[in-house]
Amino acid sequence: MGISVRGLIIYIESVLLIKRRKKGQLYYVLPGGHLEDKEEYQEACIREVYEETGLRVNCNKKLFSQKESDSHTTIYYLCSIKDIESILKDDKGLPFVELKGEEIRRNCDEDSYKPLWMSIKKIKKLTIYPIKIKGVINKHSK
Image (cartoon, rainbow, N blue to C red; front, top):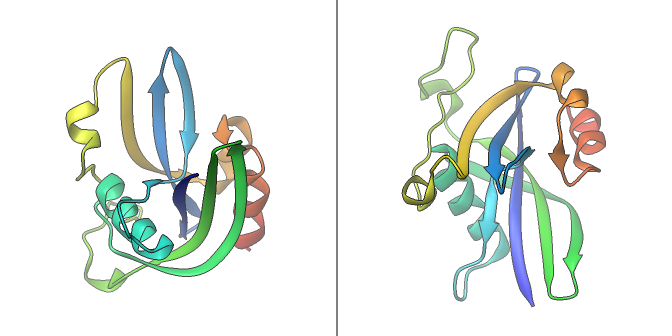
């Protein structure tokens, strides 16, 4: 069975998302990806968040698991940013984010990845997968 992990990171009333364009569709997901050989779930989440955002995080709490198909499950974690005081930030006080991993090589017009901070107030209008994550974001932003 395939396992993926994703990290929910909320900071200053914003959530860290990956803006995806794939097969002509535009949508958003939390940063994350597949486990590597013999990797623990939380280790994979920490690595994947770093590769997709450039941020070092702690995985603080498992939020939920979701079966994506008969052969694939995704595990969602609530994460916090390590050493937040020493990280470069933009004019809104949000940490700078950038792709660091294999997505840099795969990033093209037809299959793009862009890490960005989105105001929690704006997420209700976005297509975010999985759909239930909007409720989880709202619950953990208060």
